[in-house]
Length: 350
Image 1 (spheres, rainbow, N blue to C red):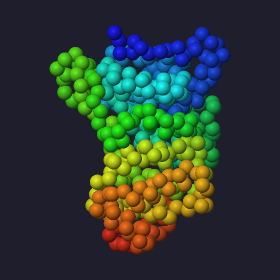
Image 2 (image 1 turned 180 degrees about the vertical axis):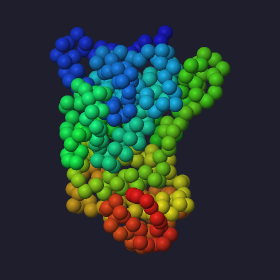
Image 3 (image 1 turned 30 degrees about the vertical axis):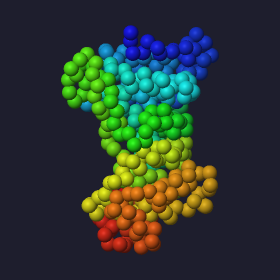
Image 4 (image 1 turned 45 degrees about the horizontal axis):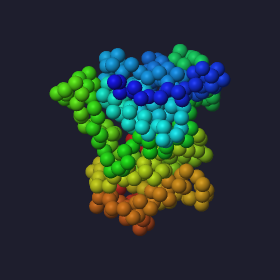
């Protein structure tokens, strides 16, 4: 019995011409996101077959995929996001089926966590939710999808803009993917002789422990979150769905970094203080009650005020909350801590 023998492909209405035509048009919106996520042509072809027809990768034939490459194919996030059903009751068992497949490389089961938590859910929203690419590059890589992309403004008229988003599905995908226990950092995955990572299995199928996020969440992410707050523009579709405005993702962040001490490096201390300063001085009234940023600030302020953190971070929080911090141009890229001296530093760029 194969590990996907119970996979129900009936959600793909491949005999319905209208459904297939609509799905084909939707692919033109999906492909640019995949390109932004570094999916090469081979990876995009595998993902396209899944998106259009429900065809799963031939896992055992992909064992020779470059394991050190950050370019993967159908990871867990895309497996769930690109499924025709949006019903959690349908998708949750599929999540477990995907993670329990020992023939998929561990990276293909885990890469989606990094893509969702750190790229689509954080870094890209903090930089506006869009990315520009040379038109000549896109014509070569995604010619059919490229024609539907917006033209960049001067002086980048030779570029097109890709908007990075999951149709406001970041929270839903996170809740499907992350274990119920928000304190969990590692997962035991079944592996085979062809998919093991750190040690050779003793049996055809063995188990090995992996971190859910190879690069753990930490206090430094507050700086990236604060850049999202500092954007002077109205939030574009690719920026509205910043993951950590939602309850469970923020809880996971907290449990990763609650005991983390503030960096001994002056530059990082300064960035962290600026980030906290922005959070406590964000104008929620001017932003509006229903804004994603207002939602985030209310939630993160409550957490910073009420939860336990490391002594050094508690001291930094006290400096901001007690009004002792003086920050010059706090909402610009040239923000600088004037005092206290402990948190001043020399930075090349913010």
